[in-house]
Every structure is written in structure tokens, then in C-alpha cells.
Length: 264
Length: 289
Image (cartoon, rainbow over all chains, first blue to last red; front, side, top):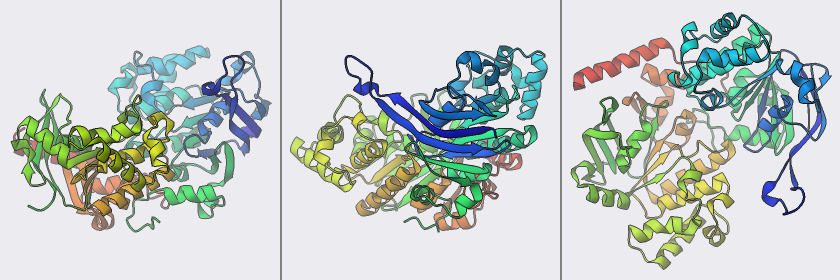
């Protein structure tokens, strides 16, 4: 198993209700989440805004520390590990962000952006690794000398993917990575991601609000609502017979490109 | 002249030269919903902005006609045009948070236009605002009038902007990606509300969106744009059954659909892009730009 998550709970302090003295009351965001993610699988995490999907992703990468429950990554309990203990591990789980414009340093060239984490983890042969990563995401090697603003949205998102895969991680978390893109680049980025998962034997967590995109890419789906898992299972089974009322509501709300779809 | 909004050969350019809209023509009749679709940068929002006279300063209209309710807006003086647009057209914007002033209560934000531009009395405007908030199904309208935008959810804020757009009974409403920032479940409610309001008031609606799924639910007709050029104009049913232009077909196959996981999300091929780029070049050569 890549991930085993059991009864995961996480809360944030509600600073708007902080009393003058003492600690702020806490708002629960994840309310007891459990699931298994087998190696090589693609897990779609879906839910509305505020459902806790990004918080779950960040907890899986230990960018946030849970209140209770356990997260095991490849058999190691990482729930409460310190930054020191995690250091050897971090390279193995990487993230691709939603907005490539704000997650790529505008003052660095693409080559430097991809090489940054490689340097941090002490890799050598940086140029070769950067070139290889660019090859894998289908960008010309000459792009290493360009700045992010010189690229299109789809190309920038490929740079984000290249930066993550250059480290040869076992797991990648993609947080809404196609929601800012036009449909044509969306399709390209999704195809690329699907191809890389197969070629590199990656395990992928794919956060999205769009069930159509999830259906295309994911093997398994986790449906979150108000910080709880309302339904999880095999993608085809879930689309064929959604069990939870919330999943059915989500599906019924998606406007399909078809004027004959019943919409009431 | 049929239609409340008639655009003829509208050309918009950057003051520095490049063409943004290429001889765009379209009609929106009273009571009809016309969709403008295309990818980012295709110029779909710019058409709405050209009509409402809110184009960025760097852009200018260099040719064409915009007829709103029987008057060519571009033949009027600037002041006359503003008055005319204010009285006949309104906008439902994309982002309900930035469109509302965070430091002012909701009530005055709805009534201001009625009082300042249309010269209503404060009492009449407030009564009208309450009535509209009721119509867009906002519970406890009197309390919402006294609220600040941050106290309301995204869906509520979008309802308020819809109420505000319909306040002065405009002949034309331009909705610019009105549901893009919302969750799908909320999006559905808001789209239905816009459709109901539009039908009840018999307004002409120009609906700008990148989402062909949304278009198929709310529009009667649509124009597909690429690089500021209309590549296909069609009635809804025909478009989804038999899209004619290869770019329209490519756009449809790229649109995600969970009912057709293998047939959807196909990237737009380079051949299609070359084809449509060639059309754009041909248009420019013919138009002498």
C-alpha cells in the first residue's frame, strides 16, 4: 500500500472567534477519514469548496500535521513525524499545484525551476536530469532557458509536472491542476499525466471538483463532503451506481455538453 | 430591425495595432439567450465589454456597428452612449466578491443605480430591491439588505448581482462567466435562476462562457470564437447534433463528459488549429489589416 489512512482528524483555529486571552476555538475540517491507496493506483478526490479535499492532500504530504488518526506512507507511520524525520522521505512524495503562474518563480528560468528541488535533495548531473524531465513532459529542451511568463498555461503546467517527476517520486499529489486551463490544454495535460503514471509506475492523488475529469483519469474515487468521506470505491462502479445522496447530487449538477440531457 | 442587440462587423484593436475582434456580427432577439464560447483569449468577453462601453483603455473600436434597442451606439456622443447603455443594458459579472464593494451594505449597492442614473426616489428603489431579492429567492431580504458582502456565501452574492442586473428592467443583460467561480451544485441553481428571470422578464441575454456544457443548458443560439473571429454561429440543437466547423467539433470533443469518458477530453489537434489560423489570416488579408 502506498497510503493507509485511518480515522484522520484535523482542525484549524478559528481566528475570527479568538477571545482576547487564550486559544482560539478550533473548527474541524477533516472528521475521521479512512482509506487505502494501493501502489500504482490513481485516486480521485472530489468534493465541493470547503469539503476538505485540499486539506486532506496537504495532510497526506505532511504539509499539515493531523490532530489524530494515522497516515502510513509505504508502511511508515508519518502522522506526527518531525521535519527532521521526514527529510529522507519528502523526496518520495511530491506535489503539483493548481496555479502554475503562482507556483513557478517568475524570476527563474524553467531549467532553474526544475533543478531547484534536485539540488536540494543532492542530485548530481542536473542538466541531464532537467533535459530528461522536459523530454518526459513533451517540452523542447530549449524551454529550459525560458521564463514562466513566456509559456502558455498548458506549458507552464507541464513545467510543474516536470519539476515533480524529476525527483522520481513514488507518489504525486495533483491539486486541481487542470481547473485553470482551457479544455484543449486540459485534455493534453490529463493525457500526459495518465501516460506518466503508466511509464513511471507512479501512484497519483488527483484532487478535482470535476467528476468528468476524474472519470477520465482515476481508478478509484473518494467523495468528500463537509470533511467526511460520503462514498469511495472503484470509478466505474461509482459512476454506474452512485450510493450516497451527495454523489448523486454532484452528478446531476454537472452540465453535460448535450441539450437533451434532462436538467431538472 | 429584429433583435435588441445587433452587432455588425465589429472590429476592435489594441491601440498598438494587433486585432482583437475580427468583423464580429451577431443578433440577440428579445427573450433569447445567445452564447459566446471560445477558449481564453478568443475575445468573447471583449464583445460584451464593447457593447457596455467598458473596453480596457488599450483597446479601441475601429469599425462596425452596435445597435442596442434600435439605436447605433457608436453613432452617439460618449455621454449620450453612456446614458443609453445605463438605461437599457446591465451586466452579471463573473466574480461576485470583487463586483460588490466590501465596505458597503448590500441594499445601497442595489439601489444606487436606480437612484443615481434612473432618478428613482429612495423609497421606490428600496421597495424594488426588496421585491427583487424575493424574486431571486433570497430568504429574509430585509436583513440581507443591511448585510455586508463578506457575510454572504458565493451563491448568495451571485443572486444579489442577478437581482441588481434585473433591477431597472434592462432590455439586454450580458452575463460574463457568471458561474465559473461557483461549485457545480450551486452553479446549477444559479443557471436555473438566470434562465427563469430571463424568461419572465423577456430580456435578451448574451451569455459568455468557456463551458459548452453550460451553453447547452441555457442558450438558444451560440457563436464560437477563435482569435476574435466567429467561426460558427448556430442554433443550439443543430450545433450539438451536427457542428459544422472543424474547430467547433474539436472543442466539443475536448469538453469533459463523464458519460463519455473515452470520447471526451480529446486534445484539439494541430491540423484543426492550422486550419482555423489559416482562416484568420485569410480574413485579415481580405480586411486589409
